[in-house]
Amino acid sequence: MAHHATLGPADAALLEMLTAPAPGTKTNANLNGKTKAKLPRRDAALDPLMIAAALASGPHITRNHAVHDFNPGEPLPTNVKSPMAYVSRQAPRRQRLGTIQAPVAEQNHNKENTDTPPSPVTKKRRASVIAAPAPKSADTPGPGPGPVTVKCMARTRIPTPHGPAFLHLYHNSRDAKEHLALVVDAAQYADDSSTAPPIRSASLDAVWPEETPMDRIVRGAYVGRLGPENAVPSVPGTGHNAPGSPALVRIHSECFTGETVGSQRCDCGEQLDEALRLISLAGRGAVVYLRQEGRGIGLLSKLRAYNLQDLGHDTVAANLLLGHGADERAYDVAGAILGDLGLGAVRLLTNNPDKVEALSKEGVGVVERVPMVPRSWRMQAGTDAGMETETGAAGWLPGDTAPAPGATLVGGHAVHGPDLDKYLRTKVLRMGHMLPLALAGLE
Ligand SMILES: Nc1nc2c(ncn2[C@@H]2O[C@H](COP(=O)(O)OP(=O)(O)OP(=O)(O)O)[C@@H](O)[C@H]2O)c(=O)[nH]1
Image 1: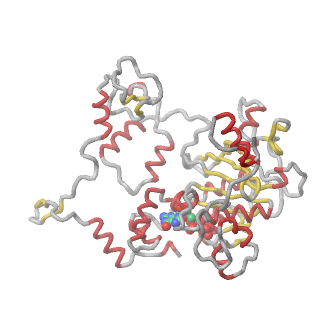
Image 2: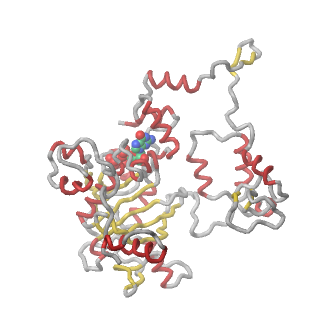
Image 3: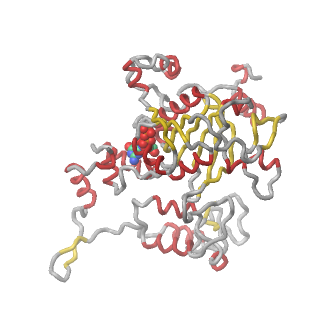
C-alpha cells in the first residue's frame, strides 16, 4: 500500500544532496566553538513588487497594495504618465482594514502549497491582508466548523463523446475549489418517464432567495432538455433520495497533465474517459471530479515530483522527498456531493481500496467495487473484444502496447456533432474565422 512506503537509501542520499549546504558556503563559529553552516537566503533579496512600485513612480503606489496589474484595460489616472504604470486596483489600506479579508482562494492556496515555506516578507504582507474578517456573500463559502456542506451553483448540458451529461459545479464549506460532478442520466435528458429516480442536486433545485424563474433556468434548475421552446424550472425536492438501484459512480481526482495534455506518465485521462464510457453505457451514474491535483499535493509539487521520478524515485518516494504524504486527498466533499445528488449507495469504479474505505467513512454505501483495468492491459490480454472498435479511431489496434497520440484524452478521437457545428458556424459567420464551412457542408 502506497501509504506505508518508507524512504530507501537512494532517497535518503538524494535528500541529503538537496538539503546540504552548497560547496564553499561560509560557516559561523558558535559559542561552543563548533561551526554552523550559514545557508543562503531563500527569499528574494529584492522584492519585485517594491521594484515595480518604484518604477511606476506614482503617489498612489505603495508596496502594501496586493492586487496590481500592468495596463489593466482601464483608463489610467490622469496623474499617471507612463504607459507601463503599475496600477493598484485596491482601495487605500485604511479603507480596507476592518472590512476585507483575503479571498478564500488565497487562504487555501497558502494552506495547500505547504512545500515552500513563505518568506518572512510574504508572511507579513499576507498577515496585513488577512487581518479583518469580511462579510461573506452567500455564493462564497469559507471554512466553517462541522461537517462539510456543498451547494451546486450551476448545472449545464455537456455533449460528451460518450453521450450527454449534465455538468454540476459545486462550492463547499471546506475549500475554495470548484469541485464538479458529471451526471449521466439518459432518461432525465430525454425527459422520459423512468423507473429510476432522477439524479438531481437538492441544493440546485432548492429555491434561492429573491430569484426569478429565469434565474433558476440560467443556473440550471430546469427539467428535461433546455431549449427556446422548453424552459421549465425544476421543482424543489424532485426525486431526491428516492430508492433505486445503486448508480455507477467514479470519484476522480484532477490531473492536468494526464487529462489536458494527454501525458502518458499516468492513466488519469484514460480513466476519466473510460469512466464516462462505462457510466454512459449503464445510462445512469456520475463522475465526481475533485480538484485534488497530484493526489492533493498540487500541480507545482507534482511537477517537482516528476523530476524526482526522472532521477529514479518512484511516485510515492518522490512525494515523501518533497515533504508530502504519499496521498493527501480527502473525500468529505465527494461524500457531500453524492449526498446532494441523492446517491447514498453506489457501485464505485476504482482500484483503490483507500478510496472505498474513505467514502464509506463519509457515509456513502459502496455496494460494489467495479475495477478499472487499463485498456492496454485488456487489449493485450484480449479480454475486451469491444475495445478495438471503440478506440480504433485513436489508432489503437489489438495487441498494441504503445498508446497513440491523444489516446489518454477524453474521447481520444475527433470532436464532432451538432453542437460543434453550430459553434464553428458562429465563429465563421459572426466572428470572421477563416474556415471553409463548405468542407463540412455547413454553409
Ligand atoms: N503526486 C503525484 N500524483 C500523481 C502522479 N500521477 C498521477 N497523479 C495524481 O493522482 C491522481 C489519480 O490517482 P490514481 O492513484 O491514479 O488513482 P486513484 O484515483 O487513487 O485510484 P483509482 O480510483 O483506482 O484510479 C490525480 O490527482 C493525479 O494528478 C504522480 O506521479 N505523482
